[in-house]
Image (cartoon, rainbow, N blue to C red; front, side, top):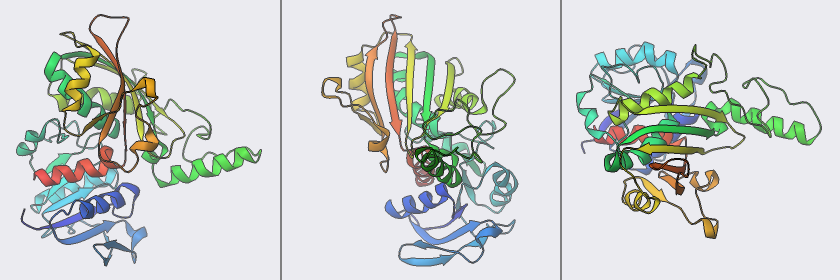
Length: 334
């Protein structure tokens, strides 16, 4: 690959930092790197390939001469600045939800729909973290037996809500252990020793009673899989886990798949690792997935309530495959 001028918008944030790590770990051909962030990061530097690089303040003219930009700076920033980048000839891979459902913007998971990259018009959307890990597992099963319905419940790590959320969980755990009342700033309720069925933290619920996170999983799954006929329902829950989203997924297929056949298919699927030995108490765990780029699946079993159903447990590192790694993989396709 020809070395590229690469920018990372939101370079000092949790996902932005991961993007920089992944670029370095995967030896992405970076000719020069341009870390971008808000005014708050003026004067900071980031370490990349043994060099301290000054962080620049993100502006409308930041992308002149830049060929690829990875965005993880929030929806408002992406909505404002991604068009400027595209106008300057830069291809944006955006991690926010801003462009995901835009019909002119590809929504890409490289193991699922890599060819969609070809029709970009300067912006490519990185899907929701929970959606990514689910469709990586579901796509090969859909190809084999056509999935008609998906029921998913998520158990999402606190790191998905950012650095301040992680700090809040730590402070709340300490408070509870010391017999003090936990203080809530990021979350609407204490996350320490608790589960919160509301993602995101504010302005979550839509008119149909689902949260916006749940509707992302519904709509993004159909777009990525290229099949609007798939019926999807989701319940998304924040749990007191540092990193690694877990999902309980039930699918109904048009043609029957046995659990054994599903394991066989998934064992060959790109980016998927089957960990499924209940007798040996081996199944995917969030703590085991942390720091790894694969998506792990286990507890694969036939649904006793319907003849063409399967249940499974899916786990992945939400900061890697759920965000930074998927974005870099898209850039590699470019």
